[in-house]
Length: 152
Image 1 (cartoon, helix red, strand yellow):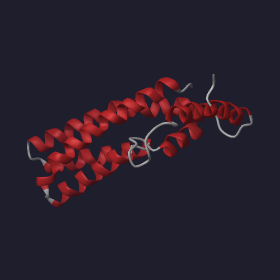
Image 2 (image 1 turned 60 degrees about the vertical axis):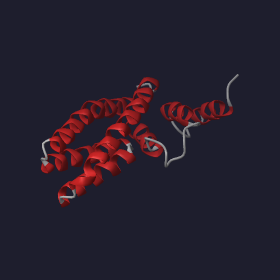
Image 3 (image 1 turned 180 degrees about the vertical axis):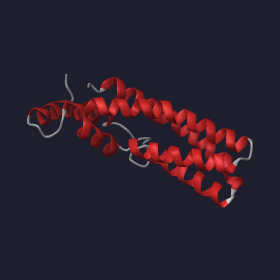
Image 4 (image 1 turned 30 degrees about the vertical axis):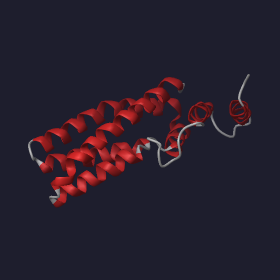
């Protein structure tokens, strides 16, 4: 038996209200937590689907999943060696990529890391780095699911 949201989504797709790519994503996220708790902003992901379809979204996910671990390593290495400029640069780069995909919590944490390392307030960095690494795990899980379910 089809759920109400799946039936509604298929009707809206047929009427051209939104694309099949968006329908898959909406159905996947209908039972997700509130916006405050979510790892990804639904509106950003939906907008990416609307702009470039599943192909663009999959490419952006692949780039992010390749880029983010490298930047997390740069940030961790910088903190381990007290190279705060390295932390700042890694956080700045990750901040932008996270925002592009709607990973707003990662964006905010990266922004805080960048600002604190610029200001030399290094006592607060290590807990934030751990929080950033943990949030990346959640974001990666969601992105992998979305990438598998979205058709090109």
